Length: 435
Image (tube, rainbow, N blue to C red; front, side, top):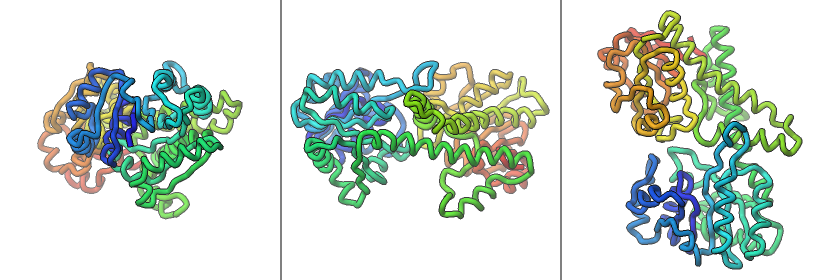
C-alpha cells in the first residue's frame, strides 16, 4: 500500500522506515530541507538504536523516499500525521501550530476515501475539530496514538504492545479501520491487541498512560525524600512493594526523575486541557507529580554541595550523562543537563560527557565543558555524578575510575551502582533516598 508520513522528526522518521520495512511504499514529507537531505542519504538525524540499519534497508528496497514537496503524497491511501506538539512558551498547554499546519496543507492533496491518521499527542477535542475540516474532502480521520519509547522505537513500531484506533461511528469509520488493519497486518497477525474506540478516548490514551507513569516515578521519588529523612533505603523499599502485583516493580526506580520530550510536556498539557474543560481538580495531583520530579534535580545539587563541604565553588565536577535517558541523544528537559547547568551557575567547574548526546548538549548549554570520553571527563575530578544510566556507566569499575580522579566521591543519581562495591573500593558513595 502507498502511504505518506507527514513530519519526519523522531516519530515520523521511525514510522516511515518501519512502514517500509513492513512492505509498504512510503513517502516521508517534512519542511526541513536539512532533515530531508539527511534522511535521503540514509542518515538518521538523531540517535536511535536500530534505526540506521532499518533506514538503509528501506532506502535500498526503493520503498522509502523523502521529500519536501507535499504534492508527492497524492495517490497514497493512508496519510500519517506525525508532527510535534511542544509545550507553548510560557504556558502548560500544547502548541498545535504544527498539527494545524500539517492538516491544512494536506487538504488540497486528499481524495475521497483517503484515510488521514493522526499520531501526534494532542489535547482531547482536537481530533473532532480536525475531522470536521477533513469532511469536505471525503477523507476520514482516524486517531492512532503512538506509544514509542526512545531507545526502543523501532521495536515498539514493528511489534507494538497495542494499537488504538479512534474512529467516527459511521460506515466510513469502519472502512478506515479496515484499511488501517491492512497497514498493521504484520503486527496484528502476531496477536497485537487492537482497541477500536471513539476520538475522545483515543486522544486520552497516550496522555493518561504518560501521566500514570509520571505519577509512579514521582511516587517513589517522594518515598526517597522520606527515606532520606528516616534513614531508610528507597531501593529496598521499591523492591519490597514492587512484589505486589497490583503495584509492580517497573518504573518504580527512585533517582533524578523523568525528562524528555513527552512525559513533562504531556502531563502539563493534560492539566491545561482539564482546566479548559472545567475539570482541573481531577488532575490537580499532577502538579505535585511535576513538582516532586523537579525537586529531585535541586536535591542532587544539594547533595553535591554537602559532599564538597558546603560549597561547590571552583570544584571540578564530572557529569556522566547529558541525555534524558540512555540509548538516546535527546536532551529535551534532561534532568542530567539541568543539574550540570545548576552546578555551573553555583560556581562549579563542570565537565559533561555522554556516549551520544554531547553534540546536542553543546548547542543547548555551550557554557559547560564537554569531553568525548569518560576518561577525559573525570580526569582530576573532585566529584563524579552519574546522571544518565548508560550501561557503560552502570558497569564502571570503581578501581579503574579511582586512578583517574582527584577525589573518590561519587553521587549515583539513578541508584544503579552497588553501594557496597564502591565503598569497599574506598569511594564516598551517596544516592537519592539512600544512605
